[in-house]
Length: 361
Image (tube, rainbow, N blue to C red; front, side, top):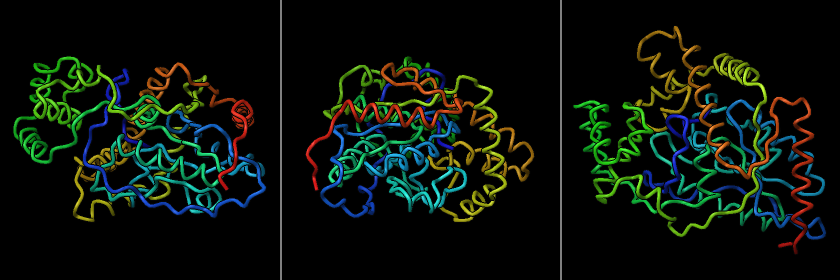
């Protein structure tokens, strides 16, 4: 499960702004491959994306195992929920066996009290791609946070960083006046941004007003401009998109039921029991966690399954909308029984077209 990447059905332009990011994460690299093996690909990386519950993680593992005899693979997570420690069941975080079999990166980076931005993702991912290639392996980006993927592939707008004082003021106003009132204020200074946000979308209303208060310019004007110098990275995109929406809906329901059976509510109870988290944090607004937190606030789990599944379906719809805005993607039918073989074949064609380069090892 992942936090929503946008409001409504139209993908917003990518922006570098966001809360101050933590220091670059430390990841444990596998041993460098001995010389004499196959040379790494000229491809900077490959990306495998798709809506939640489309089978990305399992197919990525299948692909890594298929390529292992000729080219080791390391997976870079493209998921804004997997960065949080202690949030494992509701994010469907890769288990210890998968992480031992194939190196994974950008997991368990920060506490749920912290924030992680698209800008920090681009910095971390560019560094990781270089490191993985230097080990003679293929970086495989896997996930469904489309904002991150779009930022990496298309560049970032030069927005100001977060200002804690301005945010605190806006938070206080939101609590006192209500976020619909601040949404109306945003509509007066930035009607373009306000039109794509829901009146209670506190996080994005806050960010848009913060940018305006810091710069005197509407957020939409930054989106219309260029980038901050973070050049786009040409990463081929393989997109898992089901031909039958009912197939995806059934998998979403099965996955949410499996989460509940695995102890998801107890996981949220433990997070609440820490004492330093609240429902307004980005981590606790992740799909599934938000609905579970609200159910525990009500003192009843009645309806949690229904609201959690509905929210996940909405997330999947937004993710598909993002993907369809990327015309260069290569679509694979996620519900095709042979999708694993088709994915492996597509990746091999990309590798053959790129050709080998001199090994770093």
